[in-house]
Length: 252
Figure 1 (cartoon, rainbow, N blue to C red):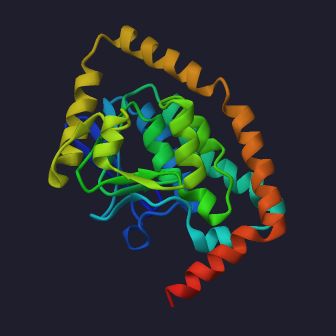
Figure 2 (figure 1 turned 120 degrees about the horizontal axis):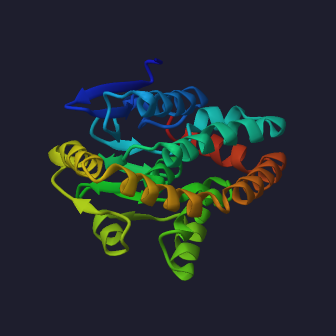
């Protein structure tokens, strides 16, 4: 297992942590592949009843894609790069066991989308979440697709087109957060929820999740293809590269 993820076992519940705290647990291709592999391995492990997804450190669950890696992406690499990230979402949905997102800080872009496809979301009052890609010149297409499973059209448009992050109270009011607890209790609460789900009658719970999976994946391929085409056009024009360069320069 790669050192960009960490696994802790708690009485049959596996806590799978993104382990790049100095980079706000931003997604690199290495991290994306390690997360997908970790989910597959834990789903196949008979000793694991449920999975909690969280981030290392206290600031971020996942701040989205790693900007330095994104800056280096060439147009012909966009599909594979985007595919590595989107495969995480698919593996969360394909996992037969409960997957609960423990949002220990910012959940933006890819991190937000991981949370949206999890079976429930636990957060603390300092959590912020949203879909800021458009402000980095990356079309908000896969994110708007997942938000469409949770939110009305107008709110989806607002968050997709402004890129603003919402605080925990607003997210809870919108139904995006299931449980709001103190910061130090996020993982514990998520593990409790995972254990409760794992204790449900097995066939009934698995078939219920399977139906949500079928509904969630119904438009996935179309959203992926639209996302690839949109990003290829944006990268070909150099828009993300220019914005990322300016952002990185501002940080010295």
